Picture 1 (cartoon, helix red, strand yellow):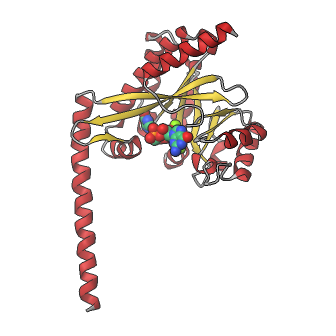
Picture 2 (spheres, rainbow, N blue to C red):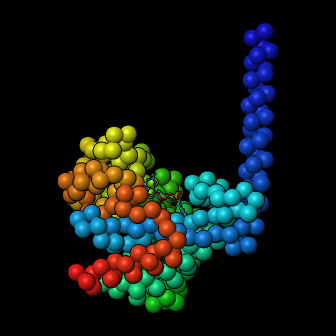
Picture 3 (cartoon, rainbow, N blue to C red):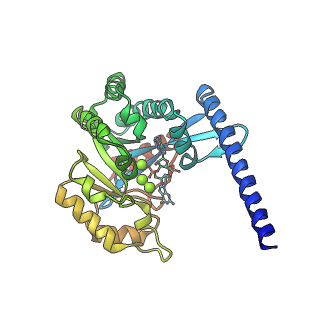
Length: 285
Ligand code: C2E
Ligand code: MG
Ligand code: MG
Ligand code: MG
């Protein structure tokens, strides 16, 4: 009887795996169609200076509206796109849009001296012409390499080999800034920090979030902030959702933050309105 039940469970897993595989296959072909059919758009989430909440940068976050199945989150389709070799065209679309918007926003709000953060997958870093692509787009929109921050997740850095160390150094040499994303979630954080040419690190949301509204893991956050300061690099806390988290981060000397407490990711049109409002506020104050 136990054996029969075991077999039944096995059949369930087979069925489930089959379903998963079919779903992934469908998503993959949808993804190809999405690249052709321009179903991607980009939302932008402000990064603020904690002291005065002034917007210092935006992070470009890709969005996919699949006409058949609705919105698919990047946490789901980016890993798939990486796996099936489709992440490079998506990333190029995002980078192009981000440069176009930044040029517009810098002229709309010249006093803010805005930067743009763009997420990169390992495959993009490994493309031999990435630096040329970046330079071409900066020229096209009259931007400087100093305006751009490329975010690479810590786990991606760890998964990649010495080849991408060279690629990162080459990118860095063009003058763009590099930021380690989701810092603290990998297992080799400390070993990589001193080898790699990074200018900033983002504390992963998992250390910030909590059920009681305070900082989830203050000792780790404090340590990461001190680490960044001792290397002389910028530090950004992700996923700040409450006023208490914000004031605790200020007390720990964290300079920059991003999260729903300040601003959600928003459409470019909403950013236009936000910048116009903040410019007006500044003019009257
Ligand atoms: P990430 O780069 O760590 O981006 C931050 C994620 O946290 C975003 O999720 C953002 O919407 C979300 N977030 C921001 N503030 C809060 C908050 O206060 N609370 C909570 N719970 N979440 C917050 P999103 O947009 O779903 O993106 C997920 C991940 O997908 C990104 O994580 C990034 O790794 C990847 N991704 C997004 N766009 C791109 C892209 O253009 N290229 C690549 N390669 N990856 C991308
Ligand atoms: Mg990021
Ligand atoms: Mg992140
Ligand atoms: Mg994260």
